[in-house]
Length: 592
Image 1 (cartoon, helix red, strand yellow):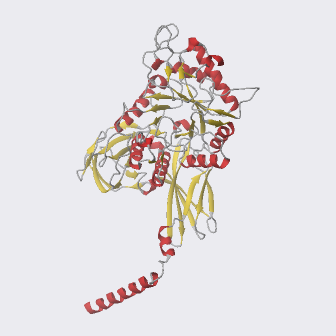
Image 2 (cartoon, helix red, strand yellow):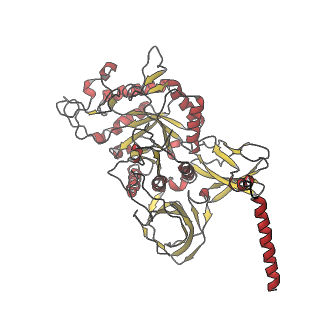
Image 3 (cartoon, rainbow, N blue to C red):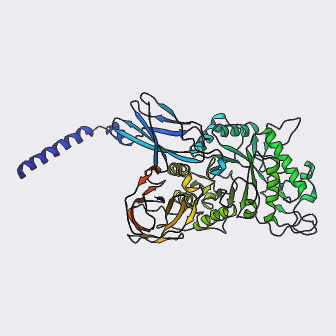
């Protein structure tokens, strides 16, 4: 018996040696097709035709196949439930497209799992779908900041990429000619070109074409402008000195925000509570809508200006002066969307009381930690009675971007994990990724790895919007690691941050991995945040008195966001569960 086994082993070694010789014969290059069968992807360019859909609309998918004899199948999920399957004719096609009719239910996220098979090879990719009649319920806000003369191909390429990220609203930043007079009308029309505040060329056709391209993808186009800004000599265009904000009670010194040398002008601040100024700027915005089909107004401010006065020498409580103006805008333009930036949360409670679509917070260094991001989102929810979503403008790699290079992927993904898990959105994607408050600034690029990873994160934000952003409320939870990994209910360096939300009959446990974090500052200003080591086969005990029917896991870092059922045991109030993998962020859902 032993002798026969030895002969078999020798024969197997000889066969293996012969195979190696045939594949790698001396003097010949390796057979490339052997390697290609392992590494070459079967398809690319998976996308939907819209960033979001209204109830009753068909979803059209498309991809580019790299093989001829392929079989394509698609599985559709709503949360952990498989709601449909579809087989698509793909043989002989390089460009494959198909339609899917989602359930006729508003404000719902879905995940499509696309599988292509060819000669034993399989590739799976996922993509999110949002069905929402109002984009501001689940805003995924992006931006545009370059409006020079462009080709149609350039415009379509940029909008197509934003569509792949499911960006459903776009802030058109610094597109206008003057803050106090965004467009100049002569003989019943506006010019074909003008310059913005920085002296950059703006092409009317480009602006209009971007708006049209956004609309064709189901996106909203928001016109950016300050609530209280005017350029020098604005009185020549009809403003009045009595409308300004002053730094002294004798109204000798107008409040001025300086801008770089060579720009058109500094910004002279108006009193947002002054009725004359309100009516003037509203008329200007109506003129914008007359010539350019924007969907709404993204209103900006400059934060805390200290003590300021009106023309009568009275102190203007600036942080409480925004809501009246905003409601006046809404009353005169009720069919247009309205959003206002709270710089460093300045005036946010007042803004939240106004009829704005969602809350927008520009986050600065007085709130530097990951925990501060969650506190801002929670505060916004409290201000609005849980009725309005939050978008954070949080600029990454701030100091690193003074040079050139690429964004630090771990820093971006950890910040997005915290914002998304907390129930917010992060405005960061446009023609480039944001690193500064001046949106055209673009010294850093996204690496191919970051582009791939962030696509999964926005698919995840879209597909699981009903757990992340649909009335989720903070819920206490007691979690223990059976491997004695350090856990914390607040974000701490060297710990896994654990916190929970409740949505209906589901409890959501978030695990965010700070075990290897270099810093707990979300901005990652020098791009030094470290990549967390992936932990596998983790066991946790969760205190839960209710009987649990099912536990499942989803993560943008694991299986492309496909829901995975977890094994668990419940003994009394102790639930023991196994988590297969944790890289940046896991979301574990308890169904009751």
